[in-house]
Amino acid sequence: MGNSNGIMNESPIPLYYQIYVDLKNKLLINKLVDENGKLPAEKELAESYKVSRVTMRQAIAELEKDGLIVRYRGRGSFLKSQPNPILHKLGLPGQAGRVRIDKSPEIVELSHFDTTYEYIGRALNYEGDIFFIKRIFRVDGNPVAINRIWIPAVFTPELDKKGLCVEGSLSKTLKEVYHLKIDRRENVIEAVRPSVSDVELLKITYDTLILQITSKSFLKDNVPYEYSVTSWIGDAIRLEVDVEDIEHGITFLK
Image (cartoon, rainbow, N blue to C red; front, side):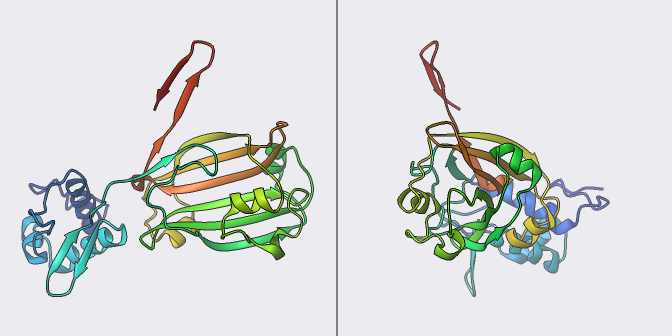
């Protein structure tokens, strides 16, 4: 049986997670909070959903982890001022594309490998040693995406020693140190389930939907030089894509 909030007790999905999803949906359409942005008390919410306070506390903790609310001891839980998904413009590096992303993504790994994965080698038309970079994008300190990048070592000698030495930025390092300037980028977008690594680094559950963007970047002479996979928490991002029909002179925003 379910209750008035649509929570199904017999569902295999944990109660706290069902409540978390329902609360999140209400918060994103500006329901549930009062004029000061305050959520109802934990006890009141637990009674409304007919669950224990322990279960409700778990659901509220998930909202806090997502960066939707902030909790103050003795005052309660409040909606953050910008709970909407991140706007990400699928453009070229250097364009004002990401909104609200913390500066200087955390570099989890920067490694040099002697061989290239076969599928990446095909995508880059390259065989040989390669650099791998793994980064975490955050908003207000909370992880929202994992960015994995492969760059042939022939383009970026000693990248593992120099690091992202220009303001911690990959695009600026490639441009200013290695004189590599992106001319165009191909993107493939798909919805996937998170990997074990995604769950651990993004602090999510296995049933969280991931929006995965696989990109291939090219130099002006149409030479591919970078392959990347960015895994975004699905409900944390909204993509904006500019599409231009050159033949018919039509430009629109999707």
